[in-house]
Structures are given as C-alpha cells and as structure tokens.
Length: 258
Image (cartoon, rainbow, N blue to C red):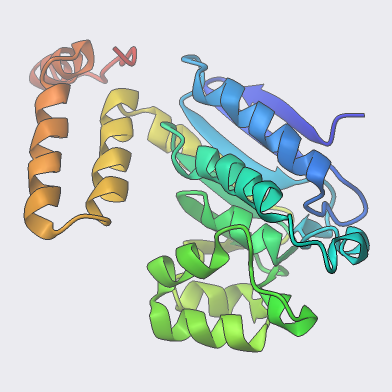
C-alpha cells in the first residue's frame, strides 16, 4: 500500500503522507517521497506542490523510532543518512513553490520535512519541534542546518538543545511558520495560497525561488549578479511577453510557463 499519495487540483499537486497512525518518517516513506518528487519536479503541468499529513493527528510525528535499536552500534549508517538528505534536497530545491500544511504533530523528521518547503501553514493545534536530543541524537535530515537559516542561530540552538515543542502561535512568532489557521482549515488555506501563486508566471516564480535560495548562500555582490542573470533569462520567455502585453491591454495574463 502506498505511503505517499498524490492528488491534483488544476495545476496544484497535493502530496499526502499516509503512514498511520502518526505518519512517521520510515525508510519506505523516504523512498516514496523521493520517487514522488522526482516525478512532480519534472511535471510541467504542476506549478505548485502542497505537502501534508493524512488524518487529523499529525503532519509527521518524527522518525520511525521502533527501527532505531537495530541501528545502535552500527558504524556504517552514513550512506542511508545521505540518501535522506538527497530526498529532502529534492524537495528543498524543487523548481516548484512548495507549501507544507502542518495539520498536527510536526516533530523531528516532520519538522525537518516542513523546513524543506518554501512556506509553512500550521493549524492551531500543531505542535512543532526537534526533540532528537532527548533521545541522545541530533536532527539528521537537515534540521541543524535549515532551522538556523530560517529562524536564526540563537533561537535554533535553543530549540535544538532543549527539544522543546512549540505551539503553532509561538512558531508563528519566531518565523518558523508563515501563518496559523483553525483546525481542519489548513489544506484549504494551502490551496488558496497555491492558487494565488499559480496565477503568476511559473517561470518567474521559478527564477525568484532560485534567486532567493542561491543568493542566501552567496556574498551580496555575487548574489546580485546571479539575480541579474535570472532577470535576463525571464526577458527571453514567452511569459514576459504575455505579462507585459496583458498589463498594457488591462487584462488578466494567461501564462503558459514558457
């Protein structure tokens, strides 16, 4: 039975993690996530991707701790950890805008998965955190790197060192999530946001994502040069012709992503 399900509405793909009861990040879930995003990233009919959890309890409540005992004492685990990084990178570096809808527990690997997405919407009952240190571990799916890049070093270290769970409102306050919505309304909020994004040129959105993501890793002058390159690229597309013409004709543009 598939642990990752995909539904499509117009140009939006909804990726649903369905690994009951708590949608844990098992080896099989990692593999299916990798296969799913390999397909969606190359699908020109998909302009935005939403990731959420099945049911009402959890987005993803962490790793599959039941499988941890067999790993203890094994000195050859790095390849499997690097494979998880490869899969999560395929989400982080997806050319499509990604939205995580946190519909419950978002802990450990679940928080790390949410961090790979561009935007996070949390339902009010969500609890968010990276409690790996309470097991004698560290977040091994990018959490030690993505969390401080998002919320700053000091606050990230506090969460990483304590393993504290945050409420949705506290996560909003520190910039870990973009918005909080009532219970049961997360997916609808995600769809509304994705539809708003999909009204714009997907080539423009793709290059904006590249400019931000790549620029954050570069010195400012190099980042500005990269922005200029990506800006130039867009002036060679059909979408910019349509966007400018639509503006001049006072009508809504019909972008094709070309």
